[in-house]
Length: 198
Image (cartoon, rainbow, N blue to C red):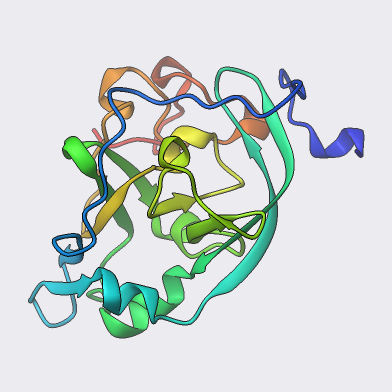
């Protein structure tokens, strides 16, 4: 591993730790859906069934994964659907600058549009050529490798396009709005002007 790949304050653990908040949801493919709503170009909500989502074209990304609790998992191979594919099918309003990723139990994380569309960001369905396990986010999680991993929400159920930024679950509880591990943006008290909503 190149030392330059490890952000400051991070270490590589033995094995692959799994951290999550709350219980692991059960997956029911017959009732599962993925919704794109908020400031869509048409003003209408878009809905995908599990069958719809499974048929979308897939891409692979090899990327590191940096948890705010200071461990980093290096060289993970994720496969899934790119945000660009979703945006082609459910376009945002031209004024959209942020998204909220929504998951089971009302969990959420906000992202700048530049992070959402960055190379490497992916709605992952597989890890290292195998379907995600339940505790790693099966059937779907977003992976945002260049930010701390709380932005890589597990058990994703939708995207809300936002015209103005709004804090997600952990951001409302004191985590940094941007979450860049290279700048150690862990907590909201570290935010510079313009890095979070008023």
